[in-house]
Length: 530
Image (cartoon, rainbow, N blue to C red; front, side, top):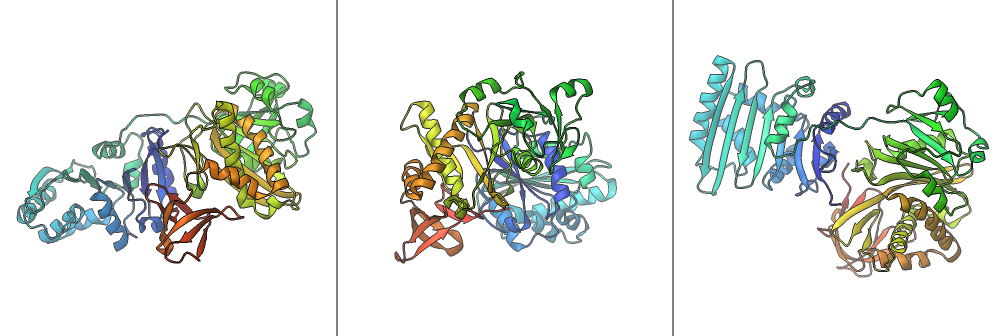
């Protein structure tokens, strides 16, 4: 599965506005083609988001944009970028109130690159003067300007349009760079009103594929154990009331659910039907899962939700409500808010199972002293499981530090997300990922094997195999924040990347995964934008 293109949404830090735009986008763009990210004011000032996989940038607030942000947008535009300005931005307000046509022309030309372009100057100023005069008199306008900058060899076009009682739109295109931008003075209410065509039409205009789609509705889940007595013996299980964090869990036994029904699933409430030994058809082969399970504890209780928010949140709520249920696995057929590292969302396609599993580790264990290393043990367990199941010792599944999996080096096929927190009985670890059904049961078994290997023989034995599976042996990289080039040596005891300086070979840097990401295509280790 190739990495989907990104649609970046900048709202100046207004989370509520982003949530509303994100909800609208979920009904317009296919999740297997595009991933939506919230671009923070801090991230806007950085350049790493300016890349070919950024399909579109939506700007919903311009009040806090500084010169660095505008410069990055211009850089993106000049690299075939697509930008949509919405929600009453200052540029259009300045355009319609500015008394100087020369200043108006300069505002528009800013997006096309060189402000020194002369060949389109006078004609463009005349076009704006005439169009804005028509707009002022009639309250509507529909005018188009075409020009070629012979000095730069670039073709430009500008369309200014406004129907009565509708927002003003300005569409600009640089055909040489295959770049385009749309400016609108639409309010957020106009943009997000039911039936509004502003957002879908704007996306289509800049080349984003629009597919009217209905996001899947959240569903109740089922809970079942390998032996019914396991659930009965758990302390903390309470039926018929809301327990846990968000989403709250509402447990009801199967026979009671038939009699009394179940509440509706929502982002704040997950109803769970507790099954007996009978395994109904729920979209997940429970019989096959338990028949192949080879662990004593891990995975013996499973919660399956056909459509969930994210298994990480459900798992956190489950651990809070029923802390005695160590080793339960949460599986979702689909997620509508899949969580990645740094709060990123990721695609949760049909045909793969998203899961999170938690288990506790005694504080006296060596792993409890270096919890950040656990994700690397889990990564080894996954690749090991795939190779065993495939029957191929050289199956080309590889680990990309810190938490991704690639087929060869070209296709990202999955990832894991790990978290840990201390509690009275030790360290509670939670690890989530996207795998096939057969891997869930196998991966848990081999994960325990590799954990035991680490505990009994130490990290060196695990790292020996980890280095066979990963992509980075002796790769040359640049650490962006230090402007330092180096050679990757391996991992340290915490699982951090060790890089030897090229300019000073005696100096070794340890790069943590908390806040850093590895761009393989550019050989760049940089701060992860949020």
